[in-house]
Length: 70
Image 1 (spheres, one colour):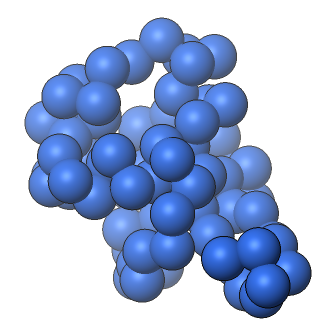
Image 2 (spheres, rainbow, N blue to C red):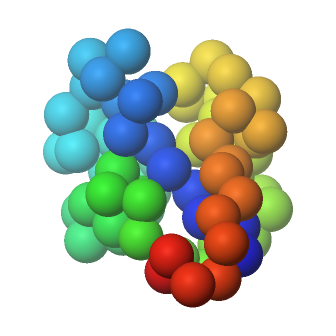
């Protein structure tokens, strides 16, 4: 399974969840799930928006985990 994990990116860039939410248009609840590495179904365009905000590539925020860990 593939998850989006913003935890390391978020802390490297030092943005609050509120700032991420305001700049990307994602709900605060979704941003919380993403920073915790929880499974969230996302469109590629949304992933591109997040990556652009953080100044990284989409592959930097995607993590593949075995299904039994989710």
